[in-house]
Image (cartoon, rainbow, N blue to C red):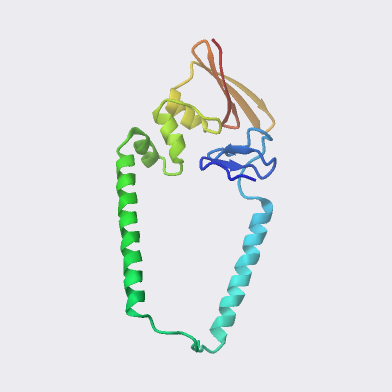
Length: 181
């Protein structure tokens, strides 16, 4: 099984690859988010951690007998690694600062929860399946016409741009794009 590209994730319901920004799977139409078992596992893990911490607090502390003090060479290696990490952090900070000066960076700065690829697409005036209605509106502007269908708790929309571009939404998430020539 291959890893998903960084701007995608796997739907836990149908196992299809979907955009990371998608809140509803365009394939099975189910809400994406935490799997029901995830919450139970998290609670169980939390209880185990709490029990372990309480157990460690109540047991007497003892020094391990096989610990050797660090050598001068260990200190040099540690300092070299620390300096390399600081340099890498500085370089990453510089790249992030440069990105924030771009149109895509300014969009991401205003919308902290949005991923970088979505902000870059909006800056290029492009749409991606999985975008929210707000993101499509930022990329392409207000549609010329909106056709809506509401059934129960479900809302489908078709946004019309000009005479040949149609964007389809399910519950506020873009599911497809149609362009006629």
